[in-house]
Image 1 (cartoon, helix red, strand yellow):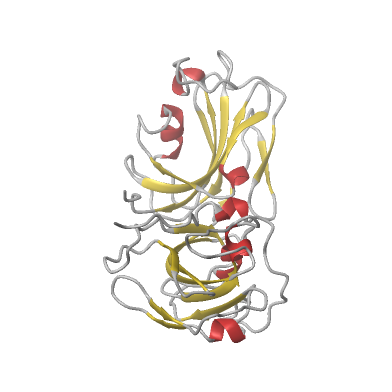
Image 2 (cartoon, rainbow, N blue to C red; image 1 turned 120 degrees about the vertical axis):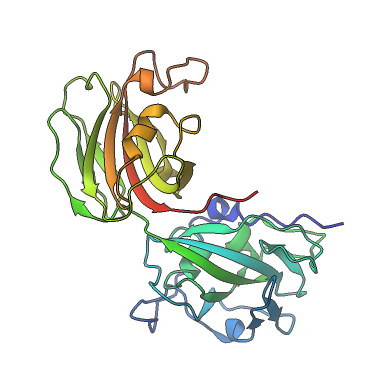
Amino acid sequence: MRTRPLSIAALLVAAAGLTACQAPAGSVDGCSPLLQPGDASDQVSVVMAEGAPEVDFEVPLVTEGNQARLQGGEGDRAREGDIVDADYVVYSGKTGDLISTSYDDASQEMAPANSLRLTAGGESVLADAVTCAAPGTQVTLTTTVADLFGPDAASAQLDITPADTAVVVLGVQDLHPGRAEGNARPGQQGMPAIALAPNGQPGVTFPGSPAPEGLTVMQSIAGTGEEVAEGDTLLLHYTGIIWETEEVFDSSWDKGTPAEFVIADGSLIPGFVDAVVGQPIGSQVVVSIPQELGYADPATRPASIGEGEHLLFVIDILDRVEPAQG
């Protein structure tokens, strides 16, 4: 019987704010990693094998702070804010036992968890570790169970405590931009003005006039990628605001990670689909959606949205991706 792994997905929230305070030294292809290798990470031997990496180290292994070693990879390096997709294995530095994995390896008596999607330089030790990684990079990280899973993480079954060392090996699969990338476009009369924070998160200033009566789409950043087709699976950042109250009711930026959506009626509200289809990848679009093209059915309408209210979305079209498996 395959055992259930200690959840690593939750660490992206639980371990927020537990990032390392080490100063970067050195660079990888002109990119400065946020974490550096050290005695502990250098003691971990990794051989990339079919199925899952083969990891070997002497136990007990004790790390001094968070250490990370980047090896290999081709193409662009992940800068702060970029999105990194990676598979992983986690081992106990105390016992050498497997704690969690996303690799589906029949030789392991553990059901695989989902792979990770990280924002490089974000609020977790994993997000720090993958900064400057490229597709194909192997990242070997030594950290503590507390920094990885949160300060209260422990398991009697796995014989781990928060102070124990965790050994993580990440296999980077893909990179995506973390924000719209293209040429800024002029505003449009009757539509909100958009200002961007340093990380690309949009701020919205409403014009002080009622929402347009019909669907109104404004391209605020013109991307240069292929055009979106209906049925595509996209990686998006978005902010959803109720026009009449100017209140945010949903935001991927606030959740800390972009969303993956199938661009099709039935999966999304019609006005959202209409705004995105035909836009080049890399664009940012601003769309005002009347209720008949939004949450027209009161039974499915979020409680925060009132009868007849218009929606305003700012959508960053980051990349086209393969549909999630499972």
